[in-house]
Length: 67
Image (cartoon, rainbow, N blue to C red; front, side):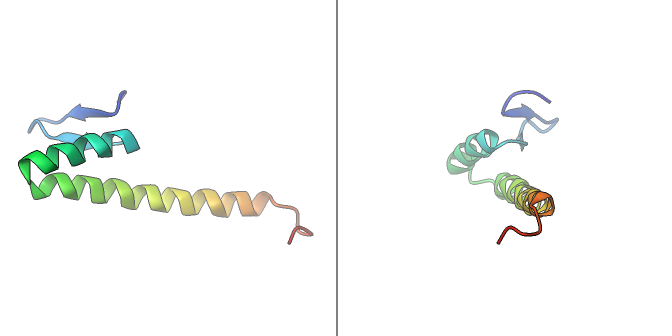
């Protein structure tokens, strides 16, 4: 999928990028559909897990003598 978001079969934006989450938030502000907030929550949870994995990987590359 390219771009910030793509339309699903129900015409709601699927959050797959940070920019996409902003677009969906603006849609939520207008529509107040809880499903839109759920998409943002799911994206954020995945993003947080990815950052932890990246941190752990970077720490595994750090030389042992580094404080």
